[in-house]
Image 1 (cartoon, rainbow, N blue to C red):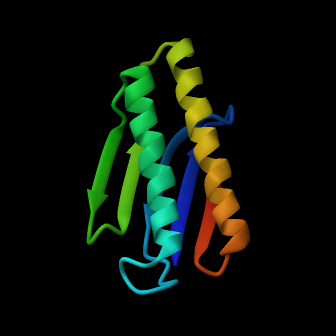
Image 2: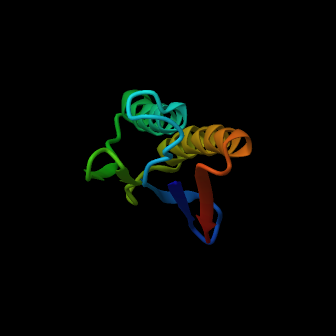
Length: 111
């Protein structure tokens, strides 16, 4: 199962997210759930870097089954708002995957 953890501040903004595990929906290379989660999460990170010129703190590990992304803290309000919009879009996309493939992906939100 893919486990997604979204960590939010007390004000509701996304501080970080972590994705771990494999969906095991299909054979490696044919798993549309893993591919979708990877595309959405890596796409969000690439959008943050490309559109805001901010590089989040990123950790990857294992055999592709672990990704952690932390938003830097010393950002202007304008840049942080852009990053938050991109991350909220990512969360909505992941929730759409969870809605259709809930036995393969679980999203947890920590406040």
